[in-house]
Image (cartoon, rainbow, N blue to C red; front, side, top):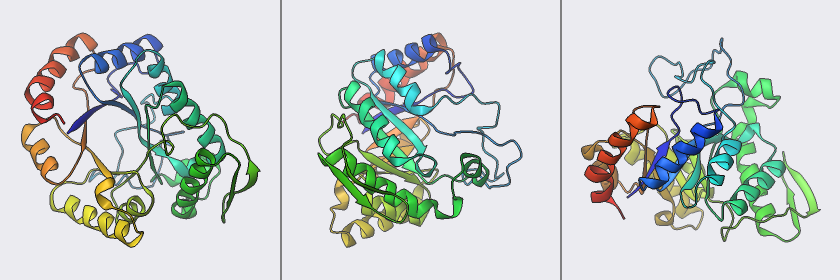
Length: 289
């Protein structure tokens, strides 16, 4: 099992460069495999879209929660660390121009010597998509095309792609990612559509807010979609977000989860250190790969 840590939103000043660097260094020092940042271009105080991961339908990431751009933030952390992987959990892919995003992601992967893990999803906030100027209703199809287009830009010396929403011919995008095969793309989401997308297109699957029998069902859908696409489902790693509890980690390991992300208990780094050291000793080391 690999263990990652989420950035401490609402708990620490993530927009402060010294704090962000110190948090990344602490996570690396204590042996975390990866550090993860979330993505919202804007927050809309009066949204009517339903947040799918809480019965209230409201997200804990309200408009006053400071959320730096995840790739900019991870780039800053990368400059202050050497080994820890850099994950987006998740980046809302249909809000981005895929040609520009491919360049940004490849640049970060190259500069960090192959540490980027790009978790992507379709998003749930219609009002955010409208503010960016994108069509919320086509986000699934565009997500599929954006993935294919970015891989073409990462893979081919001279790239072309023809789709309904993305089209380019004979272009060169440099630098290429440091990782062979391009930046790993983890498909995030809680729906059968997300599971099928992970099976067809993902290097990994990041099922959000799903546990127990519901997780088993999603993984079965992902495996079936992978086999239908001629892919080996066992090569699609699964990342979950969970509480730092031994019983939950054991359960997730039995279900085939390869990576668990925990949320920090405090934004105070001095107070956080002992709790993370305890987590390392009692859970991370016994479950380590």
